[in-house]
Length: 470
Image 1 (cartoon, helix red, strand yellow):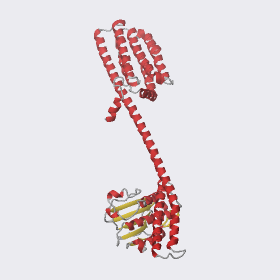
Image 2: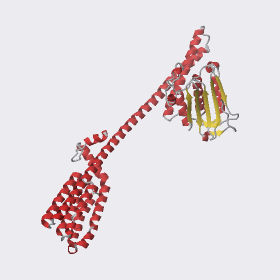
Image 3: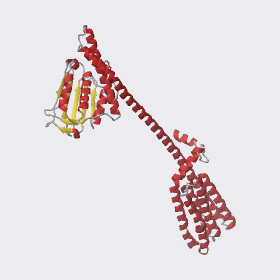
Image 4: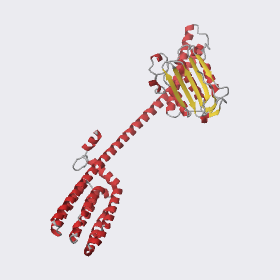
């Protein structure tokens, strides 16, 4: 409703012209160009109908047929067809209203001329043609409602001149004719007025939609530019940070291993180990940031080959069975007796498994369980399931779990570290392999994360399905 009122305020409600001259010129040009097919069809159909009514001349005006046909085909037709030809000229937009008004006036004057040259009482009936001309031209030819009303009133006046002086019509007949002719003018003017309002409002709304679309496109381009700048920044900074970090990690490893000789004090070695551990952790974070930025840009590199998933899972789990990493958790694997070979990037697949198991370890209390299961489902898809008995996630957190840097708003997650990059990166890697990642979790009941690779990536699978634990 507010848009409707706003659009109406742009119009002069009598003339239905836009208050802004530039907007009015733009509308007239657009409207006339878009309406040319309708106008041409209307002029052609009107001319054909006008000619067909010549049959009445033969039936009703035997002695005046020639005069009537001179009016129809010698006066009205040339004008109407002249305007029709004008619609194909490039100057039509500028003189459209004048040309269409002329066609309406010529058609109406042709009817009035027939009432003058005809013989009563048949000539009195021809006034009905004026009703058709007024309504048809006002509703079909796209004449502005002011011009249409002016032409209609002029024709009404000329009919009075004809009916009173040139070929008098009985008073009772004239009264009836005038009543119906006046109603036709009122109906034609009303239809034309309403039609003009809707055409102009539609034009305004179309312009508004075009403006909003252009604004949205500009915002989209800005967002894309900002996203590309972010990706380039992360990639650049990641590479810039990796070089000094590699040096820090390398030298700290030399110091902690005492390759060049003993340090003399145990505390120095502890410091070196802390530097090595922190540097390695920071390097992993930077690597994840770079990989995620590259994945979002759709440029994450893959080297696909046949990978034994069972072997990769076993290698990854060995890392977590070290007491310093397992934190007193029971880490188990349920693998099929035979190999499952898929077409994938082995490094990226290892990255996925390590991230998923690492999350399970991180959010599971001491004494809990983290289990990994692998099998081929009935569709031939390779399914990897990582289940933990940890703190779980609330339903409102599940939808955001794969958003970068997001961490669930659970008070128990405080102090557990993490950057919120693991799951988003895992999802990107799986998606680019054509697979799916699903998460099922409840607070206090643990989390189940499932990776599913499509059947077309399965090369060799286990001969029998795996029975899942618990």
